[in-house]
Amino acid sequence: MANNENIWMERLSQMAKASSLVDSSLYAKYDVKRGLRDLSGKGVLAGLTQIGEVQAHTMGTDESIPGPGRLIYRGIDITEIVQGFLTENRKGFEETCYLLLFGELPNQTELERFERLLASKRNMPNDFVYDSILKLCSRDVMNGLMQSVSALYVFDDRADDTDIPNVLRQCLQLIAIFPLLIAYNYQAYAHNCYPNKSLVIHSAKPELGTAENFLHMLRDDSQYTQLEAQILDLALVLHAEHGGGNNSSFTTHVVSSSGTDTYSAIVAALGSLKGPRHGGANIKVVQMFEELKREVKDWEDNVQIEDYLLKLLNKEAFDHSGLIYGIGHAVYSVSDPRTLILRDQVQKLAHQKGLMDEYRLYEKVEHLAPEVISTKRTMYKGVSANLDFYSGFLYRLLEIPSQLFTPLFAMARIVGWSAHRIEELACEGKIIRPAYKSVAVRRHYEALGKRKN
Image (cartoon, rainbow, N blue to C red; front, side, top):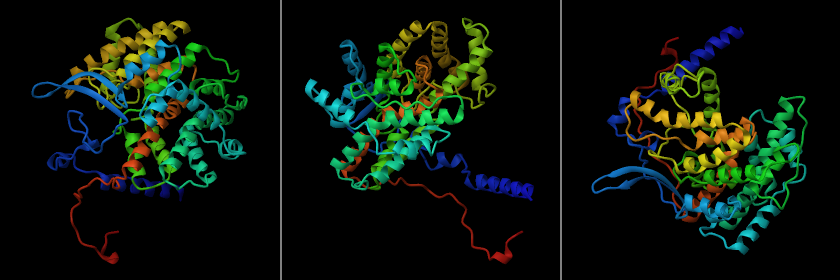
């Protein structure tokens, strides 16, 4: 009986897939921009924003010319922002939060007051950790995070109020407690999946910033070096925002345009980020490198590395997807500015941890992969290493479990999502509803008794 059920379900699955496939030639016929992008990688203009900007081209006399990528937060280049706080040897994530949310850099007094505000919000409802995290432990930390955010709706008396002051209150609360939600969901996951793992729940410390608090809550002994905290803080700054067109931020705009509540909008963004084509890509990079390190016997031999990269492209290695994870980006071509910034800091940590051989292997793949790709595929724009290429390696250096790679992305991007939600509500735009053309063959209804068995 069970076997018949499985056969029937398999048949239904095949029918569902067959009835969902659209002839790829029709996309060209009707000039459909799949993924809302054209062949050159340029996105379809779907909105306007003042929050973040991604640039990959400069304008020549008659055409745009691929150039080094730029990432701009509220009109300020990310390289200037990073240089600013690193030069002064201080953390930058809270300052970046303030800039993205309110449009201006805070002065010393405003920054200290904002940091105190976030610290005051790093608490959760009574029994929330036990009832909503420990009792309902998820086998995936991202799903656990979504579950926790959705549960917070129940504790908010003004959950459906979409006036800006209330939405800002909700967003600041989420930004403040995301490190707690992520750390606690992981501790619950680890305790349940690894029976010998002790369950350790550290409370947040008001004197610590976001990156420091996360390391304090994640590690059983709460110990971390200043370099570790500084580089994690930098990674959060680089992940905080990437324009309105990235999948999760666009999701935030789409869902917010319907007038729904903040918790639902953020859960939707989290669902988007979980996908391996978005926030989950850095895990794929690390997993790919684990296989590469086994297959390539001499890490200094470029030929061996190129052979493995060709196998990836030919779907003969790793997950047989035909992708070299961490290489290429929907917008950037010549370079991803976040990669350039992070790479130098990762080198410092790799040197401190005694893993420079592995760091040099990453560097080699970064330089060889675009050349290998160009021999196999038509290039409409250049390819380069994106932020995911080094961020997974960074998290490994920080001894952060792979189950937390995407949640860490969310811990930073909650700031960008919050800013985009407020922007969508402030502009009072129409509900976002793009057009889809039906290409189904027209036919008539057939009476039940006349249908084939």
